[in-house]
Image 1 (cartoon, helix red, strand yellow):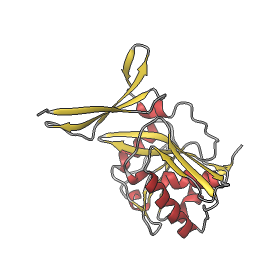
Image 2 (cartoon, one colour; image 1 turned 180 degrees about the vertical axis):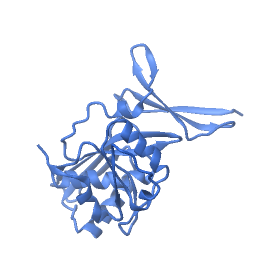
Image 3 (cartoon, one colour; image 1 turned 60 degrees about the horizontal axis):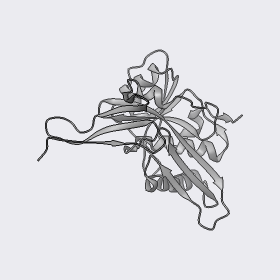
Length: 229
């Protein structure tokens, strides 16, 4: 009956809105538009990555920058985690911007493969900016943020991470790794954590250090963590 169905998504109290096409008879449905609510109405955001990272505290434990691709547009967003001791018999697992079930799965992988124990801790994960990330390439970001908060160690503020984590703890390759890295370079990031199998595809450019990881046991040494101030 219609050629195109569009909808806005966003959180109450957050100025950003994502325009998505649920149906597009004559074009793709995976492209997005990013807008900001201002006094004069909706205004297009020409550089969403820069906008989403505005106000980020670089020396905060539990914070990491992850890379996502929406259609042909790479987005860098801040992902935060908070791991806190709980007094409840059933610890809380809450996620905003990523699937709660996916977060719970990654916690189980970390317990099994890294020997950590979260049974006495509440775990919260949040994607800053009110957007939702569906692709599994943020798995490594969730692992990094949770480890950072759990160990009270801040990550390198100029670090970007990407990669899907399997049940065996392996880090699987991501699609369009090069455009993700180039977006990170454009915003001044100097270190990028990617799956080892993607390193061969990277031609290499001055200004950014690309580090390959094979499994989650390699992550902590590669992230460049230090005590949070």
